[in-house]
Length: 552
Image 1 (cartoon, rainbow, N blue to C red):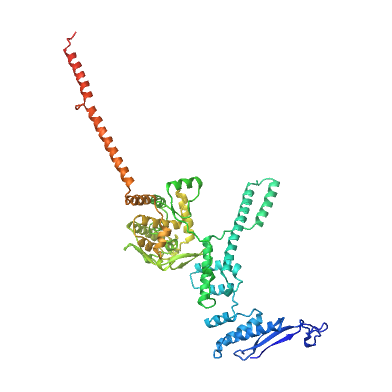
Image 2 (tube, one colour):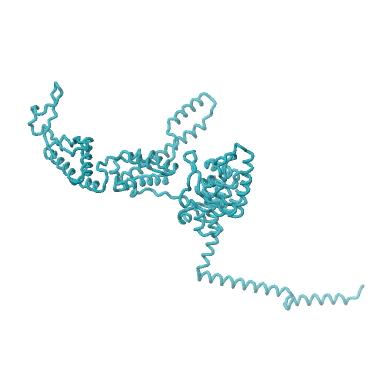
């Protein structure tokens, strides 16, 4: 195909404004004109022509080099590959139109052979939008992805080309997030200090009112209170980007996923701690929880269940405390999957929140579909709850909403998981017990089962975990008495010489003390002891002498 280089003068006639071209008197000057190239490209399917054109080269050599580059790109597709030829031609036409740099020949060859796009102008933001539009997951999960994309990914890396995204770009992004956290903490501290100072200014008095007005204006001008992006959220942002880029690899848009190689601070999950007497005492003094995840002892759990025995949702608190159902699973449990005759229930649905809206959904994971065995006491509790629900249905009459759920509002409608959490927190506060979250009842159920010696596989299946490691790592809190028993049992397995000698010395000392006690007892009993016998003889002689004396 035809292609050429040529000189071009950009000078214009001062009167007409047109380019002078070959009429420019300076055209023959060595450094006056620039060079341009033009290369014919294969015609489109409809027969229309297309070409590659570019100018502004300072030398003929530079222009010829780019023309050779264009021709090398045209030669990537075989003559019997019309599809490949059209892809290359369309790529060169767009590069010419957008005035972007020519792509590398070898990279273009690799992309063409791999069936990837040759232009590569897709940005990260454009791909994320396309990726989200194609996701077919639960609404709440999609909302979480959208939040990561909207708040963190698009503002920081959305404008970068997808095929040129590097690990260093992501490292810079997470560094920026940490820097933003520091600024948020500083802004929050300043606003908090201003609010606290405002609270100390009296309301009465002209000067005080003017001062309060000025302080309120200053507070309104400050950034609002904001939450920092913690380690867990940063890990989720990374996971969202990694999933999106993996799909881009699957569609042969890119070949490398930088999100799989960027290093960020790990998110350490808080370990569950038991409310021991010492921790309760400190909490009563300071009001501080030792850990975000706290577990009640069996005695504390029993005290709470006794306190809420007359609550309308007592059966729910009881079921979560002993069988470890998730909040959404309990709210969404249907009577049709609750068989009190066989002492079991099947977890097959749940209610989940999307913002403040709720919707019915499948269990969290495939392992969430499970059969949970029920003890006799729990069955009795659920039977009483069912009778009470029947009474509510009769009382509401035609206004009753039949949802078929075990736990409902008074008129039969769905329970809102968020409101259930609020109610639980109020009940805990009213009971005077140390605070725990509703989900911590689930932690407590796992702890109780493990403390009772139930196999960890059965505990894992009851809780709906996909792996027993989750049960061991997250949900097992060691009760003090269980820990002491384990420590004693472990210590007895190890024979120690010093321990044996100490026990032998203790037995010898005890035996010696016992012998001495027996000897002292014999000495005071009169059975052959000399001191006792001599005293007894003197007393007897005095008594006999007194009887022989005549009466006066």
